[in-house]
Amino acid sequence: MKFLIAAVSLVSMVTASLDGNLNYNSPSRRHPSLGIDVPKVVRRGLETRAWDPVQLNFTHGVASGDPYPNSVILWTRVSPMLENDKSNVTVEGNVPLYNHDTETYIEASPNPVCVDYQIGIDRDFSSIVDKGTAYTTSDIDYTVKVEAKNLQPFTTYYYQFMVCNSDNKSPLGRTKTSPSAEYDGSKIGLAVYSCSNYPNGYFNAYGNAARKDNIDYVVHLGDYIYESTRGTLGKDPRATNPPREIFTLYDYRTRIAQYRTDLDLLLSHGQYPWIPVWDDHEISNNGWRGGSSGLNNTEDSFLKFGGVSVDQRKMNAVRAYFEWMPIRQVDMDDNLRIWRSFQMGKLLDLIMLDTRNYDRSITTLGWNNEYIADLKDDASRTLMGSHQENWFYNQLSKSAARGATWRLVGNQIIFSRINNTARSSDWLNADQWDGYTANRNRTLQHLYTNSISNTIFLAGDSHANWVSDLVWLDEKPYDQVTGVGSVGVEFAGTAVSSSGFGGTIANATTKSKGLVRDNKELQWSEGYYRGYYELHISPDEIQANYFGCPTVASRNPFEISLANFTVKAGDNHLTRNVGNGTVEAGALQRGTTRQTNVTLNTETGTWNVTMFNQMFIQY
Image (cartoon, rainbow, N blue to C red; front, side):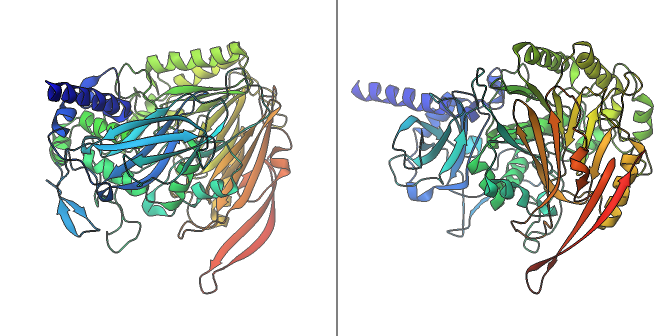
């Protein structure tokens, strides 16, 4: 009887600790069938012996994200192997797990790994404000995701994981809660990223912001990974793993795990809480609600890719994303919802959208581009579905009603109209908001009609820098010289490493000149540099600082300050002179380009810097 009571107590304790790991319910607590059968995991685990702590490693550092005033999400992975769980492997059959330390193949054990965690006010944990125990297993790729609670608003904390009953500890992480709704402090800093393509180059941009350490949070607008393949494993240090386009759960776990070996990405995750959202490549290029450019709901497509359907592929990608990213499971009515919002004091509301995968009407897939161009003005076309769209407008109105100074909209793709002729033979990129005119018009109408000011759109995806006044062309008057008539501003950023305009700096600048010539609301264009931008937000203004990496062909800490912009509260347009009248690269609508050409001397390891001024004025 005593043994039975002890066993029942142990089952209850382990079950509670398993439930504490949010990934067992990934990606939705409302849909337990999509998650893991926790009681089954407990019963299975009790029949096996415990792991020896020396067999376990924290393979991918630590991360935190989705900060609230009193809690934050903490993440790590603790595993007996670097390789990922081989569940759902269908494209190339069964893949054995290989332990490089012992040079032996091993099978994933069903035994749970026990992990303690703690969070405190300093590196020495002299005052621990929250702690707990969680379990993980191969079912969730040995990932651990917990919610640290009992925290104070807008406060820096340090956290760490430990294998239970051992000295085996994870790296030390640092995080920060968000301000309370009543906070009216002076400034919040964000670093904004998108499009990190592992084989395209090193993720120097992530590390550069961390090394300067003058921001509070990281916002990632998507394309955190790419599903495509490139390079040869063993010969190319940045070759993709698996060495093929990815479709299965194993594939997506392996790909995101490879990206998380980049040292600058590890540094950023360990130092700041992230607020990420996916774009298309976390699942498949140019996704929409019924497929993508790489996989559609046809028999040929199903057979070609090993029997993986569109819906199954999405589920594989979404599950791996939720397992590996330090994000909350919002109150979802379906398994694909990632759109959510954050209140950060009276200063701002950050609204994160999904304009790619949730309920998007068909987009350009290569073979249908002309057809989509003809459909672009159709009133029924939507980027986000009616559910998300209504939620979005309500978030904007509620933010204005509660008196938040700024509304930042984190979305994937360029919102402003872009006549793209100067860059491409086709003026229209219908995969952006330009292909969903009615959806954009409804958004602009909501902003103008309800006099919602201080709205800032953030965008990634395009692998180039764009800064525009937010205007409703042909519907509302707009003075491009003064900015009067604009309803907000759009800051769009280049890629961390994905290819931009290509060619030389001079060639990219020529394209930028044509773009600002053809788009009167576009105030700055730049497409040569890889990098990111920072937003420093105060009650009076937002300062946007754009940075470019001289090269991503090697890991290095160098960057160039490309351009700086200011938006004054209440103006709803960029402050004139835009960029103080001078930028380091690209083209201003009116102003000077002090073009900096930076090259690396590979023999001496030094940088050569040359500059020349270019004046561009558009009348």
